Image 1 (cartoon, rainbow, N blue to C red):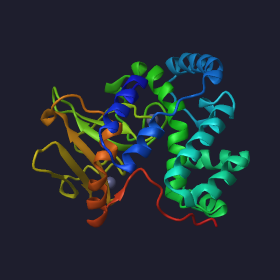
Image 2: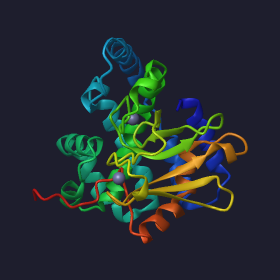
Image 3: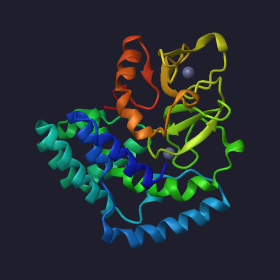
Image 4: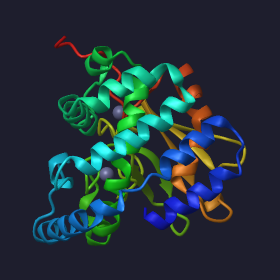
Length: 278
Ligand SMILES: [Zn+2]
Ligand SMILES: [Zn+2]
């Protein structure tokens, strides 16, 4: 995924006159502030050098030469979200006023730990808080994905986590040319080649407990696993017309998430259980 693809996504989402689409479009339009770019870009160059020497997935601290770019993005994200959901305004103001909460929250989000305790602390729904971090970290992560994706050796990775940020997948696709299954990172949109018949969350390979449902057009699939009861949405690009933009598809397929949930499956990329340490 690239910054150019993000721009195309925004154009696509503009065609949909739904408030939700508008919110996503505006969040995807967020960019690292120009004044932070020189430092960030030279930091990315350093990381590219390290990454090409030893493929290691990036920690949140690796991404940031300092916290200022993320703090600025969080301010922007918060004010956009508060426009669409005014009852979050107070909580989000609390968040951006406290760097220590920002750091704890961003680290928890990045590691897929639950955000329940931090959300309770500032008085917001944890899903809204997660959206806030997702939207704020994305403009930074996408720059790493763009710089590092060409260095991934696809045939030798095949793990259940993103080769760049260690994130979990939230979308899959079957490639147009040979139907191979790829995963898309829920955090940085990096795409990586994966096994066709393995659960991307628990590694289950028992074919009797893996299944997929498909819609009439055969474009969309819902892969489910009976071992971990997780699901992942997928697109069969052999049945796709034109270019498919995954950030658009994430939003357009929200109804599939509802259907999966009603059928008793959980998304594999979201920490949904309340933390036991409170
Ligand atoms: Zn990633
Ligand atoms: Zn599983």
